[in-house]
Length: 268
Image (cartoon, rainbow, N blue to C red):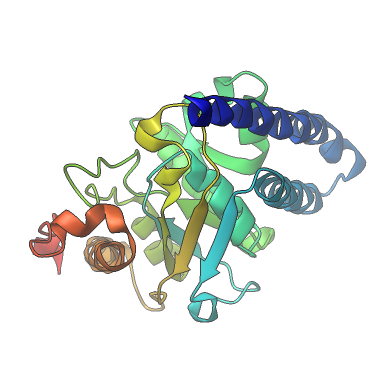
């Protein structure tokens, strides 16, 4: 009872600490495009603020983010397509705090409708309606512009939503990230985020302080690839990420002796 009360007090504190920089971020999302007329400059400045916001919040609320295997990561001056597992809402905090690249995420179009935070999504992410071919086409053009005109990488959760650790290690991947990487010849930088569910077990409040592990996996380079190679790239990276999760995420111990089959194996 006392421990649960502590967690609820902690959750209130964590929410308060999150809200203040969020309001500053909302203000900056309006101000920066005015004071920095160059879109490249205001985008990079806003993304740098988001990184500062995530790191500050994590330190103030006792969430430790441990970055592992950073030496294999694509260099920060090389644009790339980051892909990784999607385990919890805490993934976003871990990403923003851990990744040294200037990067934008790809988010659902509905994200722009979130109260206050929606405008932050509009400034920091590429919004896409996956069911609308025209929206997907526009997002591709925007990602190309970010990478080649602004020097900004992109992060995509290819599962599209949270996986269920009781049923699977990874859900099947959507092909969008791999089509983009193949068409633009951008390296694919896989990552895994583990222990993040400790912050909000079963996706239910209250929050808990925890340690989140962010691990880089060896990148896949795509020079010479075309869109026809996207499915093969997807199958390879899916297997790479699942193999790493089975080693580094204790939640998946029940699957170690009988790993789920690769849903994209036919493309290998």
